Image (tube, rainbow, N blue to C red; front, side, top):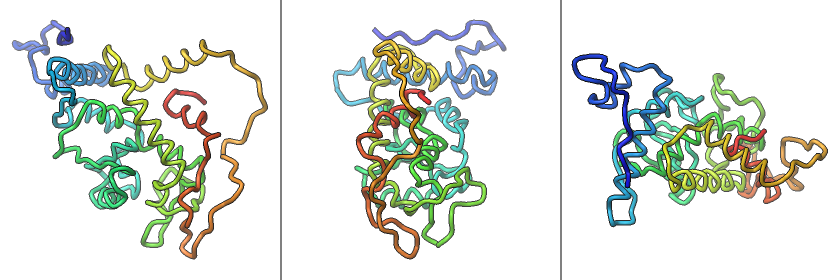
Length: 271
């Protein structure tokens, strides 16, 4: 049986904090307690599903504490693709925040490639929220940069804005990179990781906790082998052809199956 997580009973006013709405609690509590409020919101969604006979996940508007935590993740204050401020849309598939214009371009890729939702208008499942909390703009940007897709060429002919964290040139366009093998592997692993967290019991403990536990499990499962240090960037035998605008014409550009272990490190906390 799911029991509602208990809150602190120490009053901060005539009305105790435990009786206040979550968004009011966030205003009164320091940032270190934000994760506890996030765990409460996610647990309440899990309990609603457990109480229903329907197999479908419960949906609700994006929880306020979860939204606050999402906005604190590195890079999430701006659109992942164009760096526009205060993005109000998100790709569940990649766990990134997007502006309205870029979200429209993602919709054009199809839901199988990039599933788009509004942070303010749409209803969300627990698993979808976990995709965003376990993903993040900076994480995907780092992944793209490692696979030579960081410094993108926008449709207007310009590169990523000067404020972008990326520095290495890309051989694919801003939306074309979501069609690559690398993006497909990233998408599959993020969705699998979020589903694993959603299916297991217990309160959500945050990104660092989930990565630390997975790293310890993997360390116990098999001994660490000493091997020569390999280049961080994948070895690709054949580069795709590049047109005059600098866009790749080959959607398969990116790592092959032999890079799967490296990709797992983004979600397992490995270096």
